[in-house]
Image (cartoon, rainbow over all chains, first blue to last red; front, side, top):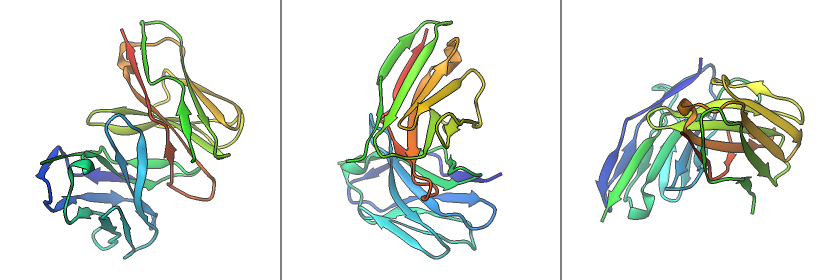
Length: 112
Length: 113
């Protein structure tokens, strides 16, 4: 079945450092791909998405490019801030009825 | 502002108790979902509903049931709570036309003693 594999955390970075969180997927066809973010004490919210191969999703300084050759959707940010500390989930729709499969999440901690 | 509201942020229950977790959305979405979130396991789908009175099992339905009597409300029921159901429960909704775009509530942290 469809699945998502994320790099394990936690990831600890200093403010203004470059961030990469790896995500690879297994899926039938070419589904849309998503990154969700969960700030402390909150539910998940959609961060960005890409709907087809070679698309780049972007939001709040984060970017991810849909690469079908490597079945990857890595999340990047050029300069992280303390406020980016959160758990990040890679996800894809799978099966019918709008079901979504999530990765295990990667916790990011940014220190001043 | 769109909103998914979960009735309780924190609950503490005893083994064997019946537990109701309520979720209400104000976006007129057709689809609603219950996930549980556990460290190292990510989010796992318990049940979902694509219409009023319709429900489908997710990946881990054992020990749970659901009810959707109105479009805006989706309830998760633990008939007899057990300690291994201690977890964070997340409700989400989505419209039919946007595959993968879920709107989440803030979560309900359940502790079963």
